[in-house]
Length: 103
Image (cartoon, rainbow, N blue to C red; front, side, top):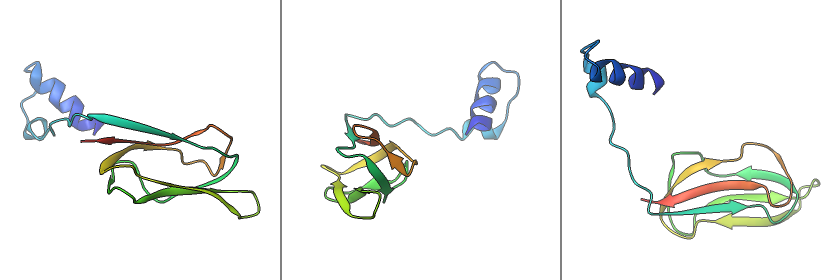
């Protein structure tokens, strides 16, 4: 992605004319975003990845205590796309877990 952006800038300033610069994707606007935070300290097990399109009710991941007992399971409130997520196993209370938004 960063190479494509550099080619795009070089093409814009007429430094380099290349087909790679023409292959830019149009950004998609997010109309509503949800930022999910942990309600418990424990271990975070995500079930989605950044950029994935998700459906309402789909499980985003769950938090367990340090012995494997499930404390909370989180699901999507609406059809959306995952913007970013925490990749850390251990999460404290009120830690950001997943952000997702309507497109």
